[in-house]
Image (cartoon, rainbow, N blue to C red; front, side):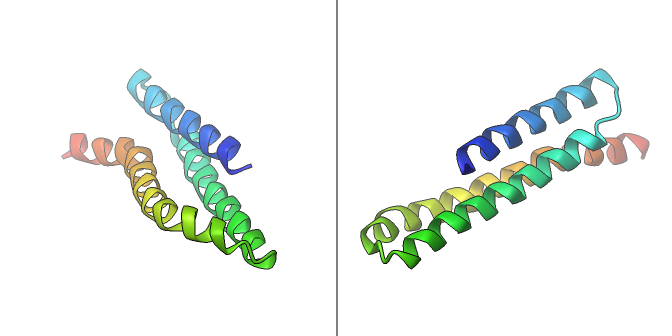
Length: 94
């Protein structure tokens, strides 16, 4: 599920950037991109929670350390890319 949500978040972010570039209202796409990013993180947390419930320590030890760094990085990139049009608008108004 997290893969599907992650891909949808990437698509929504790209739509956000393309809509801004085209001069259209991008705020719905921005909200959708950020919301899907949050849902992706929740899905990942649910996956890890299931591993803990079934005591799959090998999966936790193998996946979680690398996954943590990746999720922090990708979440930060998602936030920056989704708010970039707003920041560019503010900059052009000055």
